[in-house]
Length: 229
Image 1 (cartoon, rainbow, N blue to C red):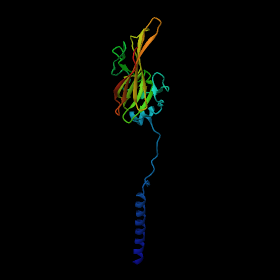
Image 2: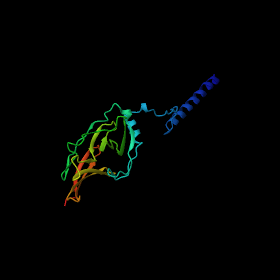
Image 3: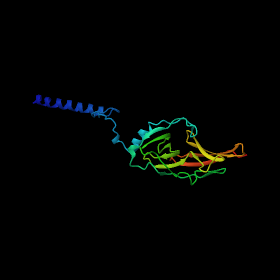
Image 4: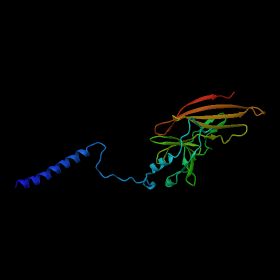
């Protein structure tokens, strides 16, 4: 009888000891007794549209700042948007920001009021300016565009423009310099002929804009750089 009890008790003690050891092991931080999961290669079709877009943006290179549209510090990068054919990528509307300088009118009613993010092949050359948590900023089609990661336009403005009425006697133009902190200096330049020897007088004004945390463009002030004589 005693032998039978010993035979029954010893396995029970061994079982309890093993159970206790396993429970303690499982409590150690960073240690898991679960079977290891095999990692599979990332498949494009499994990604969300936002993840696909971010993947493509990371192939573009940020420029050296300050970035000038007149003398770009880098070349644009090509992006393929064929994975987003179902989204509206062309004929996008932007708000014209009418500006007078001298006798010239920049970004007036005669200017284009739409822009394209891509061409018919769904490829485009973009200058990537910034990647932020809520938006990213690019230059496409001479337009600065703030977009969500679902390719929705937050804000857009022309940063390169000319007075369509300009000629050899007078003309106006716009170029832009962008700082790393996303301060925008929109420089408006006006030139007018003052005599028959083709001497010109110039007027220069800078409009200062910033980009807020949500991707909206905010006008701050105008600075007179040079007035006509």
